[in-house]
Length: 247
Image (tube, rainbow, N blue to C red; front, side, top):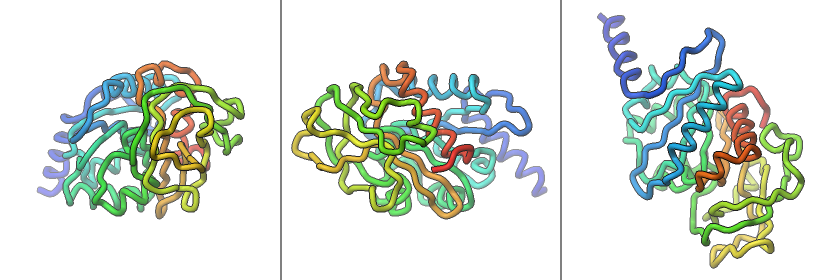
């Protein structure tokens, strides 16, 4: 009976994910989660498509969902990493939160993109996982991004000063003390608004238990996911989250 119940649970999980790719036996699996309970970014479909394409090109299987019911132990165990793609608000219930915390602490990977920092403000574990919560943002504008982790898989391809346009988040706290900062913003190159941070990290990674966490503040615009440099940055983040690249 237990075997039958487990089989039914796995079939139910498979039914609420889309675009399941046939994975090779040793191929990593990535789940893209893009549920929103607040502002919804129009670029989410572009982000999902970008991750799918990266998976097809670089050898990892990708599934996507906006159904939080997949956050249970049996289903999460199928994935090497979960990408939180511009999620907003409270997207998991208490049991789902506990399952995801067990997953990460037990060796799973997390990749937060853009509004993943505008998510689950009342869940302390998630706050530590994402590294810093969203505070505010100015209008979309070009800025200079400083590459700090020049040898990291997500940044090694970039010039030391990367010029790009996006919606640049200001954060409630500075993640530098608890994370390996990979990219930071030169605030003299744009107008950060009232939330200027001075020292302004915008991408970082760190360990959580036996798990791995990576966050990038880019990705507000659809154009971000069409930019080869940003897509390569995202690929490095995925490789970090699944454990193929070191933080």
